[in-house]
Length: 475
Image (tube, rainbow, N blue to C red; front, side):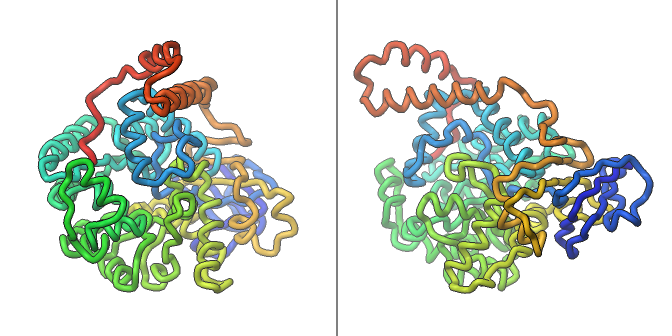
């Protein structure tokens, strides 16, 4: 029995406990309460720290980490195109796996124990298994044109069958139709039907921007223009992305995880609540892309489960779910003009138990409760959190950016005294080399293939040797 003692316990489902102890027996929590009442065991004193459930990153793209800092200020649509081209030219499966591993390492150091990842390549599942973290890797599927329906579905099935042997009790597979504009509605229905038949969870980017609404409602805007330029027929299809899922019965039958949900009106919020679909709020990404602020208060008031996601290193910069909780609370106060719009306790819940609920894992993780699995994170209380009248407020508003001193997943220690267990000392350097190759490739592209490119071209040719086929059929 391992006894973890801390200045404060933040159970999430119950009030904070000062000078508390969590007892871990194997992979499960056996006791949560005052230190004086704890059972006997091996003491591990975390000192002046907050001990809480491991954080849940309910939406991310781990494989994009090598592109951090390369697409700042670039609109979402052009980011999709840039990644597809970079994938073909530079980013091998080995590069994407390294990027995913680095993102998970960064997340663990920030106290994240569960990752919900959308992946085009499928490498993220291997990265999760290797790191011993909990998570769902949603295999992406895309194809905006009707003729892409069958090959895209075949590619999805092949990817799932190839990845199935890698699944563990902690890390499993899901299906992610990319968005309503990147997936033709027939393919969307087919992909969801396949996922339901295979008992796989589903996630979809939805209502991420006003351009997405204009594409469906008017057949106009930058997304519609880009699709037409790619030879895809575009027509007015529905009032909104949420309405489309309702009309196709996808939301009511498949109940996918809805990612972003920025561009919603009252009818959209009502439909989301009626369907029982959970929502992932990604405030940093939505702000970085200029998409706006999701109506989180209205969603919560309607009874919708809301989780938090970091989106990716490309838009978020870092895998800090505490920062997402802080920003979510502050932006809702700005948007509503109410200082009580979202309090610290609600923000912390979205980062932990809300994320677990959204992923269907709340019977196992998300709060400090006896019988749940020991996914835990401890954070030292820095000078920013002193004095502290409310430890929950300190966790949300004062500790963003603070690295974890202790992290465990299902009782297995992953971070101890701030050090990541089994860290690869060469990983950061390898990912930096991939990023350097990307930057050189980008410079060549912008030069139109002219100029002194011989050395760079040779490096890119070596780095760009790909395993596997072309990127999934897309837009």
